[in-house]
Length: 598
Image (cartoon, rainbow, N blue to C red; front, side, top):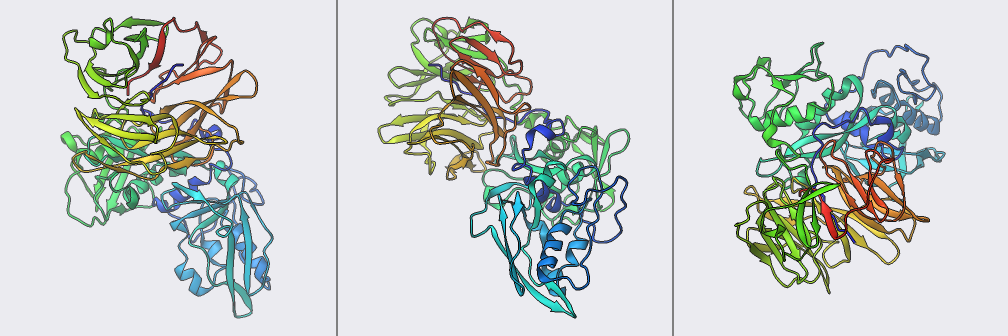
């Protein structure tokens, strides 16, 4: 059996626009609108909407304008509620018509930008003075567009107190959320990431959100950065954007030559220049808009000085904060007869360091991101660290006498992550040099774990937990201090794979910093690879959806690097998932572990 370790990192050049149709199944698309509303994308409250193409009757077709009807005279209270829900499908996005269905009091207090609730269907409303209805397939997203959870049965029942204003019914209280069909989002929004920093300010950490495609994309991305990371992620990520900033204009225009103009206002604290960290966040976030070549930043109308004295922030700025870990090796590493080897999948050569010499006797290994140091796990349960290429380098034992160690993992700070499958269940620990400390992961510690991965930025831990009836894929966020010390981990949260009981997962591997590929066996002699969002939002993210591969597979070898080939290893050979029709010959005899750096 081949065990793999694949680290996490952000794709160097995210491809959200290319993946719009394929990445967003109906239930995944809902995340999108929240990012639009709260990421400082203005929702017009006035002005007509002119139809260029014949609009869809329900506003569901992308590329058209939809101007919903205001309340009709003499409408029943249930018709008012139906009209309110219909009005939230206005295209372009605006709430001016929806507000006309509210009482004066409700209009003054309604805050739809605070959340988004999406649904696959609506039940018929009932009642008169209090109208209620159920929303089916409901999902909730926060103000940034990040998925929060599925709504339970109680939360999925909405009530609208009604009041008479003059002779007309109006809604007197509405949920502080935009309520829209999931399919409406699928046609209008795309998944992207806001780039924040780890607590030490050393590396960018992407947080997935959904924003509108097209002309609003850059505006929504900048607005999301200005909101900053959620409070609960305060020791997972931080932002270099000064608090109190807002967009001074209604949009972020992009000139014909690709210059994005970010006009800021209202800083809560004094600052007179764009820091290197702030420039990196802006550049790496806005490079997801293909038209952006560079960025110009102003504050209250004056142009801010930029790092290095340049006049514009190029889209390539902030290379040293690269979430892929700049300089990471792109080689494949493996164990052959217990010795560490390196090279291409079909051409592996011995390494010169101590773990590549005769007698190493390793069962799994991991190479740090720079490709300079390797950690090897022996049959006796010890973990040793040694230089990768220095024959005379010292071998340092980090752990001894472990029960059943999975392949370890390195993050960007050369922290070595270990998971030991003890008689009492999984035990996670992190080693910095020779100092090893246990990290309790609620919902993971003490369970039966089949595989685990740690992201290159050190912010996420993903694992496969074996259950009585099915395997579960779970994710936990890692909290750090400002000096980089690992503080604790959040409770493991299941990533819903929407599978039947009996489903078993063979292996997992990172495909980007925010997505994980899952290898499993399906009916017959067939294996399947699906790619899912690491934030737990529903839906598959691979360009072509689930890939089925003939034969039983034993391992998934993948890297988050853009363009790095992910492989599925089986008895019949090795399949390159970027070219599924191409099958390499079977791995040479004696290979027992294979993976990329991390």
